[in-house]
Length: 150
Image (cartoon, rainbow, N blue to C red; front, side):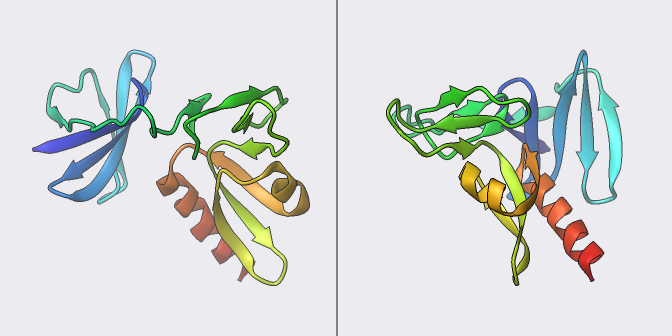
C-alpha cells in the first residue's frame, strides 16, 4: 500500500512504501500526476483513492508556513512584493529578507551547493537556480548543475 504525505495543501504529496520515498504526486487541474522515481514513469490519476494518507502531527506554534506554495523555515511569514521571487521577512520590523523554497547556488571556489530559504543578499551575490518546491527537485537540479560544470 502506498502512503502519501501532503507537503503543500491539495497540491503536492510525497509517496512512500513503508518508510522509503518512491515518488511524488502533483495536482494538475482535475487530475493527479504520479511520478514514480523508481522507474522514472509518470502516471495520470483521476483520484487518490488508492493511497493511504499519513496523519500529520502538527504543532501550530512551530509549524513553518509556506509562501506561494514554496516552503519556508519560519512560523511567521510576512510577504514582500517582488517580480519573480517569493520573498518574505520573519518579523514586521525585520530588515533581513529571505527567499522561500529550495535553491542551488554557485559559490566561488566551491561550485554548486544547496540552499534552503537563503537571504536575498546571498542570491544577489552568487549565481543561483530556483526556487524549487521540494528538496527532491532541488537535488535533481544540483546533480545536473554539478555534472554540467565538469
